[in-house]
Structure formats: structure tokens, C-alpha cells
Image 1: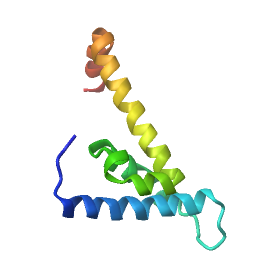
Image 2: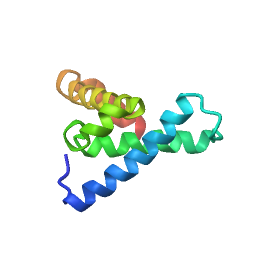
Image 3: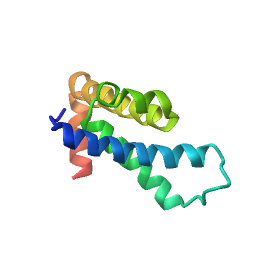
Length: 103
């Protein structure tokens, strides 16, 4: 995890809230907003990136409580962390092979 100033956390929270709101509105099937697939994907990736560097459950508890998209992104980031740690600890050969294949 990285350490952020309160101002930086507030900025990240505002960005995450905006992205999560768009995802929630689209997922809810609202006819008031036009679904832009590229923007939708970008918002999902942005949430995942923010939640991969910040403990969102601790830093943004209200957002996590109110937004289904934010909860899904947090769960995704947590699962990714667990897989990354498990792969390195329990399957070092697989980890080395994946590193060779991707470079």
C-alpha cells in the first residue's frame, strides 16, 4: 500500500465516487444516461487501480457501503492480491514461467 496525504485521499475518493456512480447508473439500467462502453470500461479499470493502491474499505467506507460497483471493484482487487501472493509463495515455478512468457 502507498501512503497518501488527506488531500490526495480526498481526490482519489472523489474520482472513485464519480466512476462508481457511472457504473452503478449503467448497471441499474437507467435510461437517463447513455451507455458508452469505452467510458464504462475505463471507469471500471480506474476503480480497480485506485483500490489496488488504497485500502478502500478503510479509506472510503461510505463509498463501499453505498455503491455496488465499488464493492465489486474492492473484492476484485482483494482477490487479485491473494492470487498474486499465493502464486509467488506456493507456486514459484509457475510464477517464474509466467514472468518469462509475459516478457
